[in-house]
Amino acid sequence: MIQDILDIKPTDSFQDMCDRMAAFLGMKTRIPENAMRRAIQDPDFANDLITCRNAPDFLEALLDDPGNDHYAEPEAEAAKITNTELLKKASGALLRWSKAGFSTVDEEVLETRENACLGCEYISKPETMLQKLVTSKSKAQIGKRVADCVCKLCGCSLSKKIRLPSEACPAVHPKNQELNRWSEPIGKTG
Ligand code: SF4
Image (cartoon, rainbow, N blue to C red; front, top):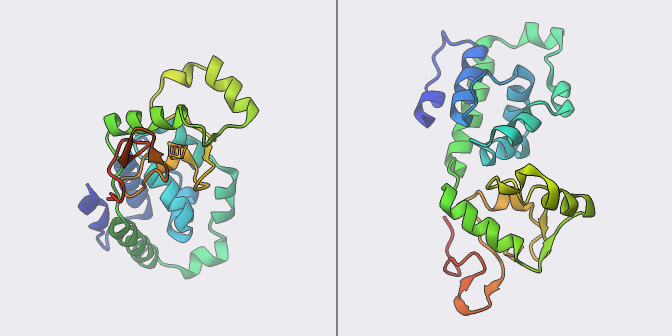
């Protein structure tokens, strides 16, 4: 799949790239061009997309972000930048992302990590989110229960942190000094 989106041909259009990116992210419809342009230029946004891969609700929120409008192509610029140049830029960005690690953890690991965070005293939940967690239907949806929550120890957004194989819980397991609170060996990443 990664090769599919990296294998860009001069005859491809920017829309083709948006289609391939959508397939890679697990979306059924083409991703908006403004979002694709933003992903190429903003590594944090690209990282957010990748960590929310196969999580349609999160992806839709990112793809509909009003901030993407800043990446609409000005007409003057459009005239200057050829399709080939745009694709070249996109392929460079995708290559960098693939080197940074395109993967996310499987559902089982995601659930274990999320359960641990939900029972941990270091989780920080805004009041409104706490209420939402109690009442919302999304309570049962793995990976979404820690939406908007932050780890007080590392300051990370938990909905992203728990998805990445390269991330580790910073706290020692209360019953096993060799494990962290996600029940993963301390020092293990990747
Ligand atoms: S990452 Fe670890 S320390 Fe942070 S909230 Fe989750 S379980 Fe607690």
